[in-house]
Length: 267
Length: 370
Image 1 (spheres, rainbow over the protein chains, first blue to last red):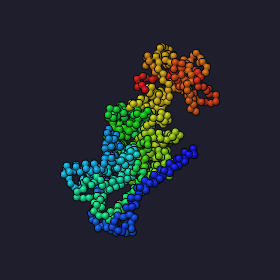
Image 2: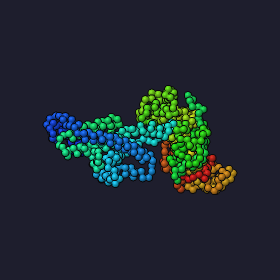
Image 3: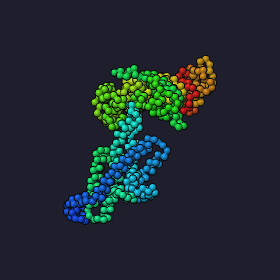
Image 4: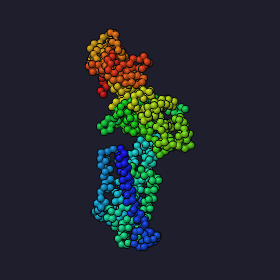
């Protein structure tokens, strides 16, 4: 009996340590990047040899970084909006109409999660080349909608299947038309899911590198610009950019937690 | 408090059928529900009772037939234009709205201005003893309170007909029984035509002016609770409403106001003759009509049965004895536990069961088997 408890204790200690290591492993690179960005010297050195905001100011001397940031934000917003629209329509059909093949279709729409991004990128490249479209904007937009759809669809399906149809029916009996009933009941009920999937979709679009790199003709996204920069220069500017991105992500996560609670996202 | 009197509507169904692909959910239903009447649609799951309610609400498109609410044909009327109140099985309270906003929803949809909405909402909340819960959200309410809010939300728009889809099914037994009585007295007070779906035969008997027994999309029987219980029209109806022994026999002799039949497993039984009885007859016998005794019955008893107590169920007010003859015929008898001197029988004991020929309920064989 006693030994059993002792075993259990040491086992639980082992898992605590494992968990701790995972968390440390996740955060160390972020901390390192963050610290390097304050390095006054012009090399990517850890630990930093002083404290300076020099490289943060240096970002502004590189218009390509700034414009690609702007491009990524706009691309992310449009892709998110489109993905939400398609995802919500899809989720409504898949949850409310029980038709044969619904599961298969849902599975296919989730496939960007498992298909290697290199394959997706090359696929899009060949497709657009075939159609002789060599512009970053439409190509990246199409790609990012496809890449973000699994997230919006997944979260919205989870939310909608927890929102019974009887809500809308109750609203209809009470005098609401079909669309009014949806807008008054289902939409506000799944609002947390919509916010959560929007944040997911935006982040996915914003930091996609692997698939996006195949579709860069006239405009580049921020991750690609950062990569291009680092191949040419060896100063901590990219660390400064990364630190700002980390702060932005943390901000979004806090917002998500505030507005909707994280459990609606993972649900 | 008669807020909706005079508005109660008549509901008429004419040859209503609902089919989904090849599946017939409702088959040629015709029915008239009088203004202010409370009827219950009773049957096991899959009998079409919910579909019938949803057809009246406008959620199940009619394949054939027509529904009239207050004389108006409803075939092409969307649910929002039928002026109904409906309480769903899961209540369908809007989780993102407070009690007040839930209840006011129907008035808002009808374009009633806020200053008129508030007193109407307050009145109906008071009527359902929900004062003080105005600013709560549905998840902060108990099951019984949620049920009342759903009812308040349905009633505040002064509907012509109230539709209830197993509204008490989610409540525990004690609360359900309280709500049954409350619902009934509320319905009487406001005099609203009410259609109530239930699979609970006891609930149907408790609440209704008339019970409609449904089986596989068809109406099996329509009648007052008493009629349906005392005079079931077929086997299904008799077995579904209350408990029954089902007895099948062959007519041997029919004379002088007596019909003698041979029942396998018991032997000869005597019933009242009926004109339609020919060769085979089917009877129902309610358990409470069967008398039990240790002594052999006197010779004048027409229907005797000697069996062993195979199983007994003590239910407080009554005790149910499940008897079996040597030839394997089973019979259930119920004994009311009147007082200390009520005779008790032991498990495994062989006793006599008797009943009067009048207690047989002869049923038509035309009804479906099941």
